[in-house]
Amino acid sequence: MSDTQKMIDAGREVLRIESAALAGFADTLGDSFAEAVQVLLATKGRIVISGMGKSGHVGRKMAATFASTGAPAQYVHPGEASHGDLGMVTPHDSLIVLSNSGETPELNDIIAHSRRFTIPLIGVAKRADSTLLKQSDVAILLPDAPEACPNGLAPTTSTTLTLALGDALAVALMKQRDFTPENFRVFHPGGKLGARLVKVGDLMHSGDEMPLVARDTPMSETLLTITQKGFGTAGVIEDGRLVGVITDGDLRRNMDGLLARSAGDVMSANPKTIEAGELAEAALARMSGRVTTLFVTQDSAPVGIVHVHDLLRAGVV
Image (cartoon, rainbow, N blue to C red; front, side, top):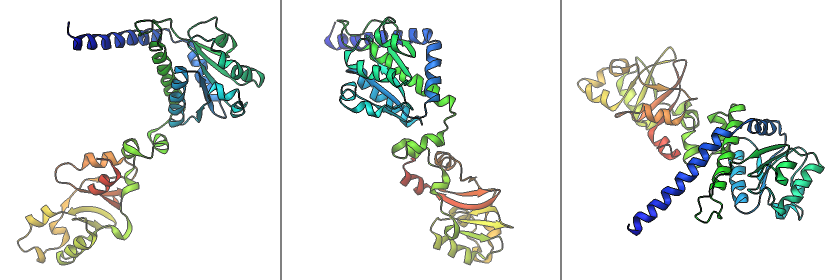
């Protein structure tokens, strides 16, 4: 067997071991999980997560996931907690403490602090008879699954299980709070996630920026409006409603005697439109073919216009 194949086989073995452990964990997840979600729902302060070593790294990720999905959270290092950072954990908070063995000595002070001030404690460990789970208000038992490490020593399967548990708690909490994409955007204003959740109303041009003409406007004036506003199009309105648009294609199709016509003679009726509350991604999807602009309407009245360049600048594309 080649070295390349040996490496691939080793990687596949790890994934199989960890995926089997996750499947088993899903099957055994029970009432303690629901109790933990209830504790987190009732938390008026922050969700504080603590753990040592690899559990600490997982705890940091869990805190970031909770915070980004609308549940204020922070990670507190147990060593630092013993030297003053216990003051970060208040009776309004709840605690999630992570330890594979449940006997990590550095956690003793933060566990004692939770008991002294009646701070709800959710313990996560592999041993049901461990100090951590015995002291916890809610004890979540990790399955006794083998580590993927060939020596059975390096935290691999156990950290994957704990990480997945954090995701499961965060998602269950989101569903209980009916956390919407709009809520999500509040905590993700930057990058591709923020761009995907931008609303059309955040990007549109409105008021005097809109290229609008009446149905009976002569084409000589309409062409000036198209040129001055810079969108390459004009919206045709009647009784305050958008009844058509004039694009480059409409101009080419009506070149013969164009200046003798009115906007209503040249326009294309029933144009594609979008509402201000829709996602910018929806606007991009509607700009199929040669469409580069969309009028934004409310009850058929134009309230704005959005150009594909606006979507590009926002990072939607």
